[in-house]
Image 1 (cartoon, one colour):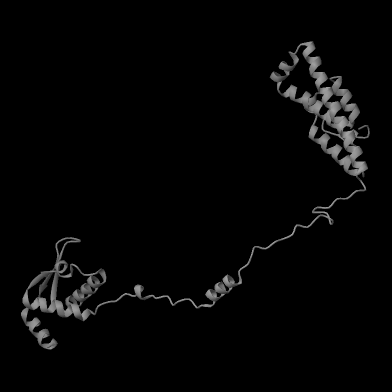
Image 2: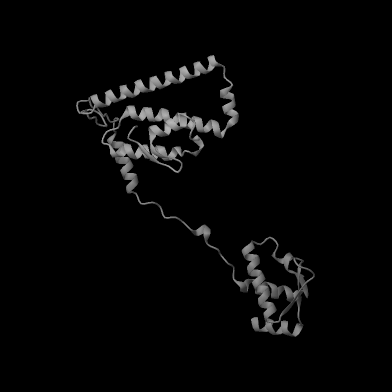
Length: 248
C-alpha cells in the first residue's frame, strides 16, 4: 500500500498521503477518481509474482470507505439519515463493520494457508483409476426377432401408385358433337343447364368446346351480367346445314 503511487487529475503522490488529505478534509472525495485508484492497484499486483492477500484486504476496506464518503456527498439525503444516528447506534454500526472486517481478514488468512498447503497437490477430473467399474449388462436378446427385422428391411417396398393424381380429360370433340346436335333441335340453350352434374374438369372441357364453336362462327354467346348464365344461340341454318353435312 505504501508503494502505490497515484497520478490523478486532482492528486499526485502516494496513496497514504491521499488518505491523510481526505481525513483532514483538505481534499474533497468528489474530486478523486476511485476507478483510477483501483486500476493502479491492479497493475501493481500484476507486476508481482504472488498475490498479497493482506494488502488486498486492506485495500478493499480503504476503497470501500472512500466510496462511502463519496456516496454520502453525492446523495446528501442518505448522508443525513446516517448522521442522524444516535451515538450508541453509530457505535454499534462501527462495531458491526469492524467485526465483518475481522472475519474477512481471518478468512483471507485461512485461504492463504490452504493455498500454501495445497500448492504441490494436483487433482484430476474424472473417476480415480482404482474406482470400481460398473458392469454393463445387456438386455436379453432374441436372435429370431432380429432375423425377422432384417428380413423386413430386405423386402423391397411396394411401388407407389400415382393413378389417383392423373387428370383424365374427355375429348373436346365429344362436347362439340353434343352441342351441335343440341343446336340442330333448338335455336338457344343455357350452358349451365347442359353441364350441370358434370365434374369441374368436364365443365372446363365443355367450355373449351363452346369457344371452338364461337371461333368457327357457328354460335353466338351472350351474358346479361358477370357470372350470369351464358346463353348460346345458333347463328343461321345454312351454316348449320353445311357443318352437319361435313360432319356426316
